[in-house]
Length: 251
Ligand SMILES: C[S@@+](CC[C@H](N)C(=O)[O-])C[C@H]1O[C@@H](n2cnc3c(N)ncnc32)[C@H](O)[C@@H]1O
Figure 1 (tube, rainbow, N blue to C red):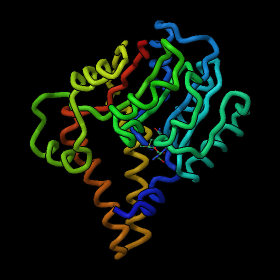
Figure 2 (figure 1 turned 60 degrees about the horizontal axis):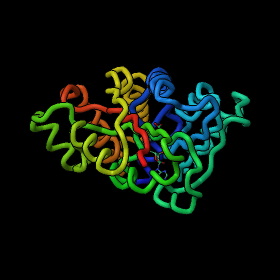
Figure 3 (figure 1 turned 180 degrees about the horizontal axis):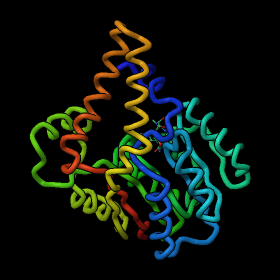
Figure 4 (figure 1 turned 45 degrees about the horizontal axis):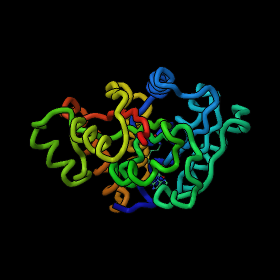
């Protein structure tokens, strides 16, 4: 797929992965029960246009740094911060999640990532980013997850190509525990978190592009791939989901 066209299609959408403000708030509330401090230092990894960043700045009572590599998303996040007057609680910087070894150890109380840890790899992210947390620090990562051991063949074939590393919740839990984390809780995102702020706005953008660029083969390839993912969700959504893994650094 043409990456530049993919990003252009996605720019200006409310969020870049399934999620919702309610889910972000609920995850913070659950982590409070596990000792999240009142004024935590938070790192939002792959923050995109900053929807979770803004919610974290509002509800954690701490300071949130969002990192991403796509400048237009960082620009959108910065605009949201400015418009809300949250500059003292939230900031963004251009930094790759693959190069976080340069950050000082034990700098954060909370690591966050909505629909982004897959870019580093679930296991590699958990392994490499653990050092960024103070001992006993907390993390929340949402990750595409099989919700059944026997998914429908069509869904299995689609994700075998699009995201072959996808595993079940049990396998992800076991991996996290093996890598020095305790799994405190998991939350499967409701179906509405896929549609309301992600797939429906994306579908509207797809329809707009189809009308605006008839006969553009490069664009049509991107639009067809995105539409196929959405169609799969409509038909086989029960077999897979986004699961939020709420974790504590052990040791
Ligand atoms: C699926 S989107 C999720 C964005 C955001 N968390 C949200 O829920 O709207 C993944 C994000 O990771 C960013 N990204 C891709 N590669 C990255 C890298 N190496 N380092 C940091 N961010 C990266 C993309 O630009 C994109 O914003």
